Length: 65
Image (cartoon, rainbow, N blue to C red; front, side, top):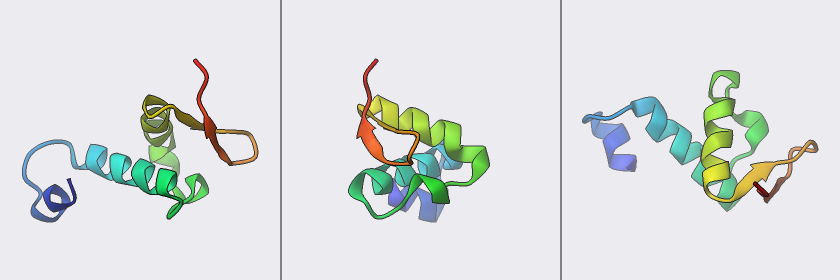
């Protein structure tokens, strides 16, 4: 995935960026607050697909459907 960002071959590059942000949030290397406003909904969706979400205090917590 990281290489696809470098070489820009096919696919939705924004989706790749969204996924990288979600992965880094899960790993603790990035915060949801740093995500650009236009991408927040998509990043939150990726987190929820991973079984996680952001609570009202900005903390990563388990997503309960």
